Every structure is written in structure tokens, then in C-alpha cells.
Image (cartoon, rainbow, N blue to C red; front, side, top):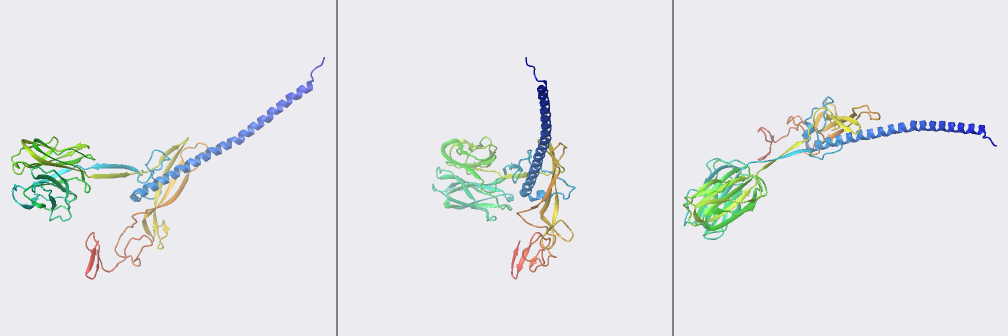
Length: 458
């Protein structure tokens, strides 16, 4: 019988114990190596996050200043005045130039005043007709003219003008098909100069045998390109008149319709269409009548009129778009600091602004004494720091950069004299102009350049 060698068994146990000890040493050593590496990785991620939010912050500031230089020009300067940008909820979203909100306001078109001819011109030959407002017109408003014309069945050429407002141009908007040799027409003039009790005169070629005319002043119509939709119509033996349907492109347009009795020319009793307001009613004289409505919707629209008696009629409609005002609200710069959470770390960020000056050679300096203030350049400092003490978070980071207004360069002018030696192009920003000959500034708000018998007022 054989017995196991006790010495060999003891050696095996010892070997195992030694192996376990070595493994433990290796594991502890590995932990000692891995833990700093993990901490280093966490620190690198923190630095990257801090750097990224600082870069994003500076990009926001640059875009904000580029959108409107007055944004940054109006901030109080110095390290005591800290700001942050309220531009986006995401810390890594960089808004483009013009970040902020835009509000579009639509003006309400309003009828200001109306006038018309009072006579009925029948079986005569008239080359012109006129109507005069009883009150002054206002600059920027619009005038709409509507006419009933009989020129013997031909197509009339109509031109209107105001002798006191030679810059205003009247454009034909619409002319109806003729019925019984008569037609309705609408002309308009935008962005008028305005003035006291203007008279609008219309000329006809060939001369007209029958004329009826009305003029209207409106506020709130867009200054150019106002005419949108038009429609015309004519029909016999009707009590319900219509201009026909057209489609508007914008909300709150002025719908202007004109109608005329084309078979009798007088003795008409008119009722405006639903939603419309009657402006000029010559039903007992010439048979001309017109109406308007500011329609809050957009789409298919027509003007209509009802006569108490059956008539043949001619009709025209034109629609005009309202003025719109665009108001831009740029990103704001609240005072204080801003907290940005990135992962497990919350960072605090802010910026402040310092004024910039130029020395005699045009070099940048932040020292005011003996130097010229440069309102087109600012020194911006951005600061980002962790607001927690989590392991691996980086320390505070700050950097500075210059912002320069790239468009509309200018300077603060304080005097017309005292700038001796700076005739010609400026190589740096100053505050004064050199005293020069042939310059007159006695009239407030103007500069007069004169030489001999010639002058130019700016």
C-alpha cells in the first residue's frame, strides 16, 4: 500500500497561497493605476465641456453684437457689470445673427375723407373733370379715384393728377366692360406728399360725353405695391349689382367697389353690400355710387350693391394691402451670471465689457488718459467656472477678445473744430472735424458746402 507524500501536499498549498497573494498584489496595483486614469478621463471631459460652453458663449455674444451694435454699445462697462445672454435654452446651440423675436404688426386701413363732383355732365364734350377735398391730405396716405365715363363706346385713356403734388402718380387699377357706352374705372396714388385741400383732376382721351367722379383719402395702405386683386362686371336689367369675384393674398385688405347706373344715370336708391360702407352716393344725380370694407380675412371676395330700381350697371373692384410694421426684439443681456448644467457638473458663466481707446497712432489701448474713445470697438471678457466641487471638474476659465463694428462705422462727434491736422481720410477714430473754409453749419440739422456762387446743403 502506498501513502501520499505529505511534503508534496504542503508545497501545493503554499504555492496556492503564494499565487493568491501575488494576484491580490496585481489587482491592488491595477486599481491604483485605473483610478487615476478614470479621474484623468473625467477631468478631460470636464475641461472639454467647460471649453465648449465658453466657445458657444463667445459665439453668441459675437452674433448678438453683429445683429445690432447698440446691443453691446449700450452696456455698462467694467468688471463690476457682469452679463449673460438670454438667447437659447440649449447650452450648445449657437444662434445665428439676428437671434431674437420678430413681431409683424398690420395697420388698419382707415377712410379719412371723401369728395366728388356735384354736377351731371350729359351730351357734352369734356376733356377733364376735377374734385377737391375739403381738408388737407396727409403725407404717406393714399388717394383712390373712381369714375363713371361715357366716351361713346370706345376705350378711354384716363390720366389723373394733383397740380399741388406733382410727385404723385395715379395708376389705373381696373376698368369695367362698357354698357350703353359707359364704363367704371378705379385709379389710385400711393404715398402722397399731402397738402392743403388738394384738387384731383382727371383728363380723358377722347373727350367724354358723360362724367361722374369721386375721390377718397385712406391711411394705412402700404406705400408701394399696394394693389392686389381686381374684378369688373357689367349687366343689364338688374337690381343686384356685383363686381365679380377675385382672390386677395393678404389679410385686412381694403376692398373698394364702384358702381354706376348705365341706362338712366339718375333716380337710383342704393344699399351697400353686407359688411360694406357706402362713401359717395350720387344716385339722384349721376348714378355713381361706391363702397369699401376692410376685410379681416383673405381669399375670394367681391363687392356688391343693391338698387331699388332695375338698371343696367357697370362695376369695378380693387383691393389694397395694408402697411405692415416689423419689430425686432434682439436677444437680451440680463445682468448677473447664468448657470449651465452639463452632465453632472453645473457651470456658471458671464461676460463683461471694457471700453477701448486709440492712441495718436491709432493703436488700441484701454487707457483713457490722453487717448481717443473708440465707440466701434469693445473688449469682451468671458468667464466660465464650475459651481460644484465634484471630483475631476476643471478650474475657472476666462479669455478676452475684441469686437469691432464691421458696418456703419462712425464716431462720436463733439465739435466742428479742434481737429487740426486731420484733413483727409482718418486713420483712427476721433471726436472732431478740422475747421475748414466754405462750410456753414448755422442752420440746425444741415451742413452747407459752398464755393463761389454754388452751394450744396446736406
